[in-house]
Amino acid sequence: MRFPLWPRRPRDYAVETLEPRHAGAIAAIHQESFARPWSDVEFAALLGQEPVFGYLVREAGRHASPLAGFVLARLAAGEAEILTIAVARVYQRQGLGWKLIDAVLRRLHAERAEALFLEVDETNAPALALYRRLGFREVGRRPGYYRSKDGDSTGALVMRRDLR
Image 1: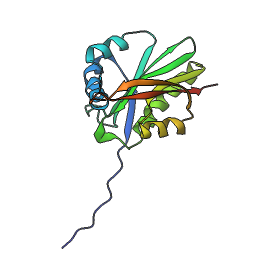
Image 2: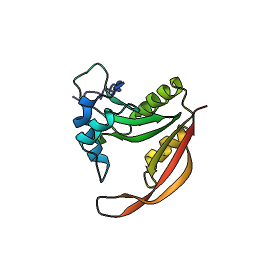
Image 3: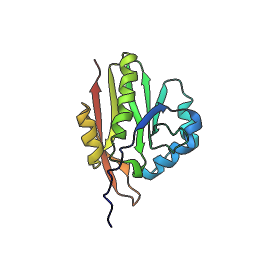
Image 4: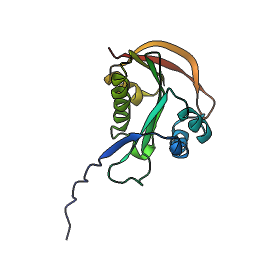
């Protein structure tokens, strides 16, 4: 006898404010995504700075669940930048990057910021597609900015989204 396959219930995710105590967990996620990952000490130091803020995402209703992703940003003099964003591999392709950037945009609108900048590896097609859907446009390039784990280098695109 065969039983029907029940559709998987989509997961619901909650966005929470990032705090210094999350430094170890976000460093582990960052290590999955970047050839030169930042350490928990570097993340804790950034989160201790006044203009730096961030958000994490995890399964809703499960406060003890592992972090699925995070974003770290800085706001100064009306302009903001995304310092880094990463989603753990097992949680990718579920719209979590969008949720994280949306949280940043909401805060920046409340703060009446004028623009949001970010840098992205020119070969990172999923991130570029997301940023373009969110209204970012290319405003510059940095050749050889990123290094892969095997030593190759790729350029960075500097992107901007106007907020007013």
